[in-house]
Length: 219
Image 1: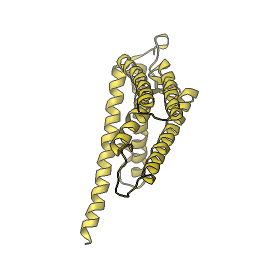
Image 2: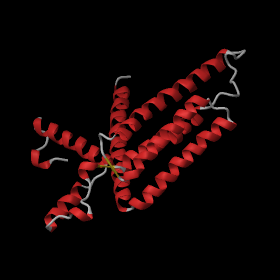
Image 3: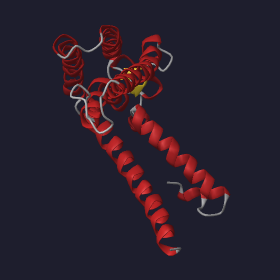
């Protein structure tokens, strides 16, 4: 077979492109939703952080999850909670924001090692290769833990927070004209929207350089 593998590769590329567009559209929608309902979003994220910490504590007490990784996860969510003091605005050089970015990666690495080592030890102690140990979490359980306890709060903060260079003016520094007000509103974008805009702008510039798209027709 020669054509079918090519069709498979083409379908994979097209599917990846559609998935990327869907994620970008979702980020845009969520960012605009948070900008319109800032107070509700702040309350929701604060309760979400506390609920995640309680869930991790219950997993440690009831399901005997390891203490040190659980303590690291709870500490990380306390650091995430510190970003809520000026919600939805954040300074990209803020130590709490930088620490949050590092803790996301550290938590992912620590829990990935925990689950992988736990599965490896369980299968080594199995009497037969075809036996499935009862105390080994399934892929769905592991993915759910990562999604709810490791990635959900950082991803929600990333979508909700706005860079301090793009914030709207305060009451003490209102612009003197309606033109300035319109420019300020256009600058009031969240981190996710800024990232998507930069990526689309880079794609537009690259296509203009290769003659695929005119510079004034940027994405």
